Length: 291
Image 1 (cartoon, one colour):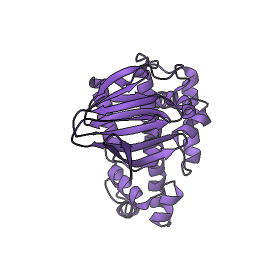
Image 2: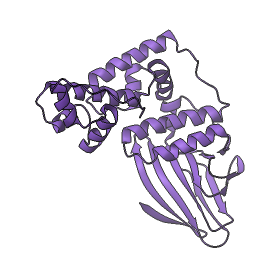
Image 3: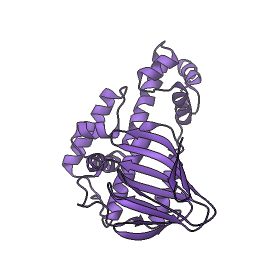
Image 4: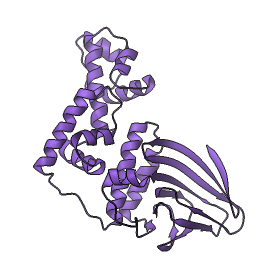
């Protein structure tokens, strides 16, 4: 947790949730005194901020907007901005920061000049997205948050540019690329894969890859990777004498407690109990819930 003062009666507390090559997700809270307050700064990176608490005014080169819970704040790298508060409450945002190069890698070449608006209002689609952002912020899995940061970038870029949607039916070429990606995941599932690296192996831009992958496979790349790892660990538990820890680490899980919890949600029992049941010929049924 990092605390800093912005002047004008405003202080902030920033907690880093996850970061990677050109992107960062943080939980940021601004606090103000009893009276009206304001501060000025400059965006170092592209910003997509999901407002979860408090209301305030934001002003930058495309005008002034009022932000409230359920809305998304859009900021362009290099732009000076001002935030002002009428009440001594402040606000809280889950903030996604992207370098220009990262944002372009994720969603393709952005419109010259960046975002041409500073807010996506709390319409139903944005309320659903901000609720999902607040929920996902509670997870500590960096790979999961990386995939989610990628999807946020693409969904917001699409909405800000008029909501252009991907084709309902992926092209034959894209389907072939997704098959290549599936083979890559199967062959390298024990390695520290990320959505951008898998997309690069398939020759696709990450956000387009994410959308097409889900359309073709029915789950996200992260979900498929995790389920591939779980499937392989289940086989290893039933057919080898390796320790549970060795199996988990050998199939790409970096944390034993996360592996045990995830395995339990899918197979409805612990890895140890699964191994005992498998060897006794009582193979358990997998859970039907999604995760």
